[in-house]
Image 1 (tube, protein in one colour):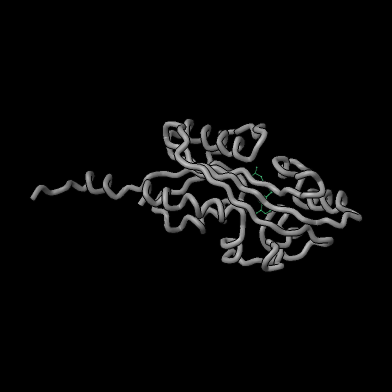
Image 2 (cartoon, rainbow, N blue to C red; image 1 turned 90 degrees about the horizontal axis):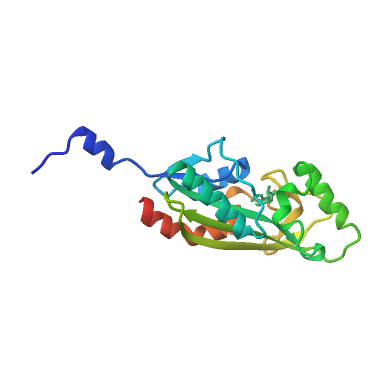
Length: 205
Ligand code: IMP
């Protein structure tokens, strides 16, 4: 039988690289946990890549991020665009969630101010996720949604962004009160990501 050289063997066991097109630390932690069964070398978007998130939908922004990172790195890239949509604010902050105010604390304050005296607190988180090939072509995309209500006061210490004011509908817990295991079941991003994990496993495992 033909023997493999050490060099050939190391090539054979080398994992393919998957870039996450994001600089958001909160998201990065969630991804690492949820993709623990995907046998890839997980890398963060190189700091030098700047993507303008000027699309008019979550999907358009996610495609822009993954396309640019996959083309520039010539590797697979996964990206998401997500945000909080509040029914009585006509879907705001929506695609502008990260730019709604200067930082998380100010964003939360702004939402609570805008909802002062408003009875209908219904809201949902949306996430659009996509995977692009090393040639910069779309392989798969998916969407996930999580429904809930905006509280009158923040509750909980975990998570990031609008987590402390968003109470998930079925558990009545805010995202900031949920453990990572719970957020993996209920979050919009987890729901979108779960749909594409079989495809990721076909490519990387
Ligand atoms: P993106 O990084 O452009 O997708 O920005 C999404 C923004 O929406 C974040 O910066 C947060 O403000 C908000 N957001 C998205 N997902 C979540 C979440 O799971 N919890 C809290 N805020 C979120």
